[in-house]
Length: 227
Ligand SMILES: [Zn+2]
Image (cartoon, rainbow, N blue to C red; front, side, top):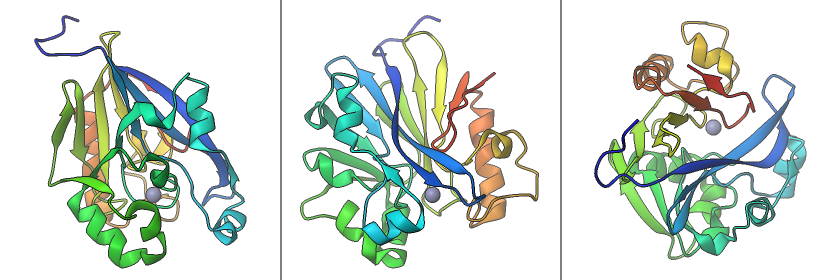
């Protein structure tokens, strides 16, 4: 595929940031994704944070995001921008490692989290956190776009990437925990917490599917769906 003017060479790398006991009782991975671009890197979701009591409750085997980045020969300082799909504890837990970065978050999600998760606010709302608050879909970089996918939370967003290999990728956060929910959003057999707002959730899965990504990547499943 020919890249349009202004397109940059983007490449996705998956990080494994933790394992935890999922709502179905099975062990789930927690993935973040690095999007490499010429001269820098973006990070989509930062993994799990403390306190220890929560880590124990969720049986978290945690990993420092700095260690995970090191496997890609990156340091936190290389990450200039962070996109949080949403502000749950397993997606923004290590935001504070990137105090220098800009955080791309939907305004509605920050408002939700400040009200519902005051205990988490130190993690994502630390002093002088640089938010780039979004009110809807946005192009973050040429070829790197966020689209709103509410339903799991009111301000959830997903990430679409035009990758350098000519294929498109979707990073869906918790818009679908697992491939099964992505492939069959009509199902009523949803795990706890998947859809705060069922109607919005189904519409959001439809939004991602209608973008027709060539590859779909999940935060809590290592399988990649190819279409
Ligand atoms: Zn979540």
